[in-house]
Length: 195
Length: 198
Image (cartoon, rainbow over all chains, first blue to last red; front, side, top):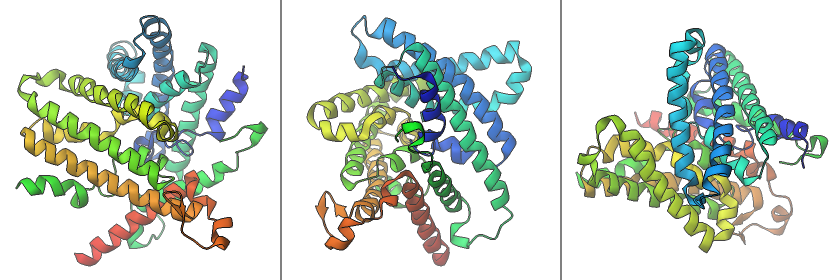
C-alpha cells in the first residue's frame, strides 16, 4: 500500500492536476485574472472535490459494483456531482451565508470542472482505499489552488508589462503556464515519485 | 444556409483555437498524431449523435430540467464509445486513459447541444455536430502532429527525420510544458493573421 504522505505529495506537486495532468484548465485560465477570485475558486474546489470523492467512492463500491452496474459509472458520477453542487449551494445559502458570499458565484462553474469528475475516475482506476482517496483529493485540490494562485499572481504582473500584440490575452497566459509547468517538471523524481 | 451550419465550427468558430473550450483533452492527449486523431473521432461521434438525439426530442424536454437530460444523453454515448474503444482499440484506450470518460464534461459538446441542437432541426444539428467535431479534430490533430514531429521525430510512428535528430528529439515538446507552448504559438499565429486581415 502506498503511504498517504507519498500520495499527497504526488497529487500536490509531482502530478499537479493542472500543470501535469491537464485537468481543470477552463477555471485555470478563466478565473486566474485576480488573486482574490483565484482564492475563492480554490476553496470551492477543495470543498466540492473532497465531498465528491467520498460520495462517488461509496456509490461505486457499495452500489454500482454489487449490482453489477459498473457501466453506468460515467452517467452516475456526473449526475451525482451536478446535484451535489446544487445541494451545497442551497445548503450554504440557507445556513452559512458568509461562506456562500465567498464561494457563491464559483459553485455553478465547478459542475463543469473536469478536475472534479477526473479525480473521481482516477480514484477508481488506482483502486484507492477511502483514506488514500481522501488524501489524494485534498492533495489534488491544494495543488489546483497553488497553480491557480501562482497563475493569478503572474497575470496581475503581466497586465502591466508590454506584450507583443499577437500574444496579448490568452497566448501569453499559455506561455506563462508552459513556463510554470516546466518548473513543476523539476519535482519529478522527488522521493522516487514519477510522472 | 445549411453549409454555413457545417463550416461555422471548423474555422470561424473553431472550438479550441477561437472559442478556447475543450482545452483539457486538446492539451493532454495531443502527444502523438495517432492519439489526437483517436480523440477527435471519439468527440465527433459523441457530438454528432448527441446533437441528432437532442434535436429530435427537443420538443419533449421540459426547459427546467434540460441540462440533466442533456448530460444523461451525452453520457450514454460516451459510455458506448468508452466500451467500444476498450474492446477494439485497447492501445488507444490505454493512451487516452481517463480522458475517454471525461468527454462527458467536454464543454464543446454541452455548448453545441444547448446552443444549437436544442433550438434547431435534426439535419442542421447533424451538420453542426459534424462541423464542430471536425474543427476540434483539426485543432487537436495539428497540435498532435507538431508535438510528435518535434518531440519524437516521427509521424504516426514512422521516422521522418535524419538519424541525428531521431536520436536527440526535442523531448520537451511531448512533455506537458510543450503542449502549452504549442497551443500558445498556434493562437498567436491566428491572432497575427486576424489582425493583419482587419
